[in-house]
Length: 374
Image: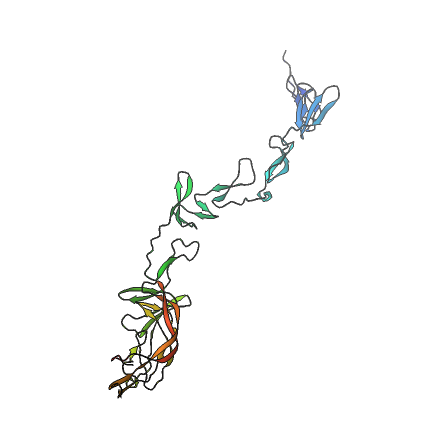
């Protein structure tokens, strides 16, 4: 006999399952718990909700939830430039972690002071925030806090020529003595201007006069007569550290030879001016200043000297007693003298001692006439 099939409107679960409840449109194989997320859970089922671990318990206990235990890292920021921040863990969004972050503005940047020959280099080590600065050697030579590139001359106060050289990985200063080859002319000598002046330079030390075909050296104050003119004199002077040679002409006084006693005309000791005994002049001491010369050597200054000059009475008369001409002769001569000593400068620059006689007193004294009579 055929059965009739009835169709009824409503919610039905498949065979082997059942509705969870009238309020939950969900089919389950057995009854359990409704979680805080309104999802049916089986007895003993564990699930995560709102960062809590929940479990469905039988016997009317329902769902019990506990806060998750977070096992995350908490970094200690001990290195310079790092500071600590709190953030959501990238591996567990329900947990917070403390991490270190780099802030370059927190770096002290204490830069070391590099000595000559070194330069400052900065770099960041792995895992660090701030730069590490060190002084690295440069490819230069160093002397007295000064740097010199390879091939550059190096200053030295020890009269040596120095240059910066590279020998392998080392930079050294190679030095050699300075070779001086200075030839100075006559009247000049090599002198150093300072301690750092190694070779010096030619500097004047004497006056120089071309004399008799060669150069003659004169010291300040020296006087030298000309070779060809006794009235021309060379004189050396030191003015403002400069050696000056001056030429002077001796001016001779006017002399009328007709006013001279016959045979008395002669040259002055320097051989420049003429002098004589004037007529009608009595015998007396005459003082004069002149250069004194002897065998080519000359006094450096004028010398004060005295001599006897003047007329003395002479006569030639017939003597009846002797029946011949009687001659009486007298001469203006020195009766008192002194010996003085001076130094003469010779052409070779040497000084020699020379003695000369100076007259203190003169008188007319008798002398023999040519015929032997007095």
